[in-house]
Image 1 (cartoon, rainbow, N blue to C red):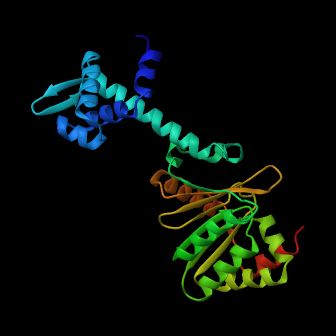
Image 2: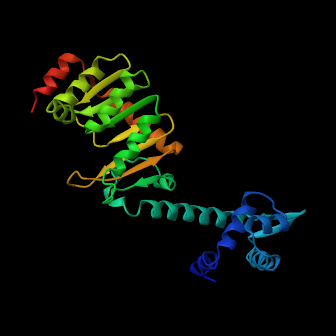
Image 3: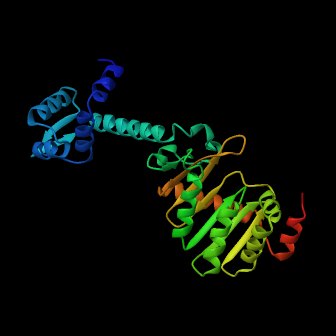
Length: 268
C-alpha cells in the first residue's frame, strides 16, 4: 500500500484512530481498549489484526503497546487531527486574523471560543470582552481603540475597588475618547486612580487584546474596521503570547498623566 492508501485506511475509521492513539500512550488490555473505544470484541479484533499486520502494535504481557513505527503514525495522526480541529474552529474568521502578529502555533486555538456578530446580536463579540472584564480582578489590555462601553465598565470596576487596570492604547484612541465629554471624564478618572495606569504608544498598537490571569480575548476586524469576531482562549501558549506582547507594548509606551492627557485631547 502507498502512503495515501494507508492514510485512507486510518481516516475511514474513528475507532482505528482511537485505538492507535491509546496504545501509543500506554499499554492497554483488550478489555480496556473495548471499553475505552466502545466497540465490540469482534470489531476490536479486526482493528488489532490490521495493526499487527502493519507492525504498528505488539502484544506485551497482558496488553498491547505501539511499536516505534506505530508511535510514529499515532503522533502524525494526532497532529493532523489537532490541525483540522483548529482549521474548523478558525475557518470562518481566518481572513480577518492578524496572523503576522500571532507568534504561536495556530493549533493552540483549536479549543478557542469564537463569537461572531449576528442580526439579533450585532454586539456579541464585545459581550465576550465584557464578560472577561466583569470576572477579572487584574486586567490588562493593549489596543488601537478603547470604546466607550468597555471604558465605562473598566471605570466602574476600578473606581468601585473591584479591579486593577493597566492599558496601552494608540494616540488615536485617546483623541477619539477626548471628542466625547462623558468618555473623556471617565478616562481622566482612570488616569487619576491609583489602581489604574494608562499609557500611550506613539507607534500605534496593531491588535486589540484584553487579558486576565487565565483568559485572553482578541477582537478582530475587517479592512474597513468593522468588528468581525472575538476569539477567547485559555490556552497556555496563547496566554504567554498575549502577556509577552503586553509587556512589549507597555515598555515601548509612555505613561499618560493629566498633562499628557490634555495634550492628547488637542492633537489631531
